[in-house]
Length: 146
Image (cartoon, rainbow, N blue to C red; front, side, top):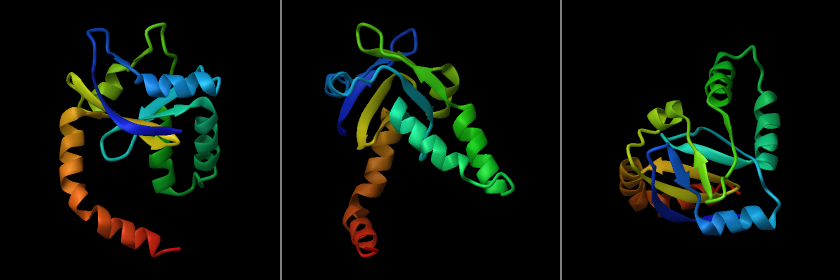
């Protein structure tokens, strides 16, 4: 559902513009509400409500008697915030998530199929540079698991 890479900036009120291609997908799929939370690798995850509920069910299934499951669920769910696009296609990002993702001004918004990731431009550039050369090796390892 979500594909591509887009550069935007955080405005003075801590909002970002969701790319028009993604907003069009929201409209076509009758999406109005989103959930934004701490992601992995230093980015933020943005889920549409339906996908959020799927992820929530999966993570709720983790045993609370296991320390790693408790840690993950605490950080993932305590960081969650509901978001709704305003008339200009912007969403508000809470300050604690801006701090988590080390966002200063410029962001990269990427579509990763069932979710959107929001990265500090600096962190995305670093991640991309550190992983692009191993992309084929990673693909081979993952595809070899089938």
